[in-house]
Amino acid sequence: MHRLLLLLALVVVALPAQSAELKADEYVRFIPGIAYDMGNDEIGVEVKAFVYEKESRPLVTLTLSVLTGIGMEEVTARQKQTLDARSALFRVDFEGNKTFAVRFADGSVHAMPKTRDGKSAERVRLKKPDAPQREIRFTVDQPEFPENVENGVAFYAAPEGVSVILDIDDTVKDSNVLDRKALLINAFLNEYQAVAGIAPVFERLREKADAFHYVSASPVQLYPVLQEFFTRENFPCGSFHLRDTTDIHDFITTKNKLRAHKRAAIERLFAAYPQRKFILVGDTGESDPEIYAEFKRKYPQRILEAIFHDITQEGRDSVRFKDFTDLLLY
Image 1 (cartoon, one colour):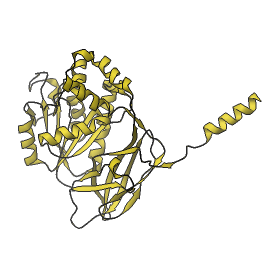
Image 2 (cartoon, one colour):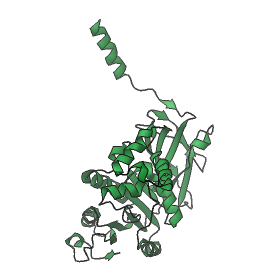
Image 3 (cartoon, helix red, strand yellow):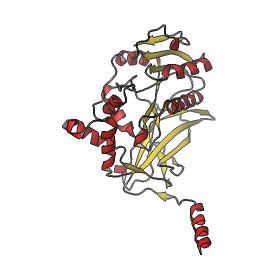
Image 4 (cartoon, rainbow, N blue to C red):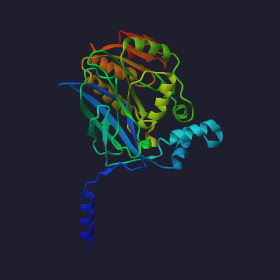
């Protein structure tokens, strides 16, 4: 009998999980991606979606309180409201084995791979129009519950031109990454603030570049509040390349994971746009100078300049900048 039960258990484990369509209480969030020429009159559109169900989970908010070291009695009413709203982004169940399709403005419909840990990602091939739009929009091809489904967008960039790759924390947004407690407080309790000096940097970049890509180790769950911040500050629209994580305890990642995420995201951008030139923008707080220097050595003719928020006040003569002849600090 025990052997039979063990055999049945093994059979159940071995059975593939059944796919299921989206339900009315499940949500779909798209992260802005990239679009690029693939030859043969086709455009490749990167689509990344997350499917999730909202949960109450009050312990998530309590966990954030413990991580920040701030007791609820110390939090203002406004901060409490902000904490509740932002922790809600983590109070979700990511749904696996979900199937759905996306519909584009040209009427074409494309099936997405079934979700794994809530994520589904695909490169969709579209026929290239005579005059490609910068913003390629799409949505889930399931109109029964549109209030749960956000529209998606991918930003098309021509084969030649100048793209900007930017970090977010302490480069665009004042985060104080070097102080764990301050980082968490700024992420979950305070209104996001722009880094001093970033406005003129963006003015300079808008004159030189026609595509923007935000590469950050921030968790993908924070995308909605980041997007609100970018819209409020009128920062350039662009693709977001955030870190996939479903664990609130992994909010602050290791240096190795951070570097691996940024390297992989930047490498994909260089591969997608093999003829484009790049401007790299980061800060000196963690590993941006070292990561960008690796790409400068690998693609010396494709990197026009590097710009750093010098939060460590190292100055132009720092050994960390030795690979960059075209360098701007702010």
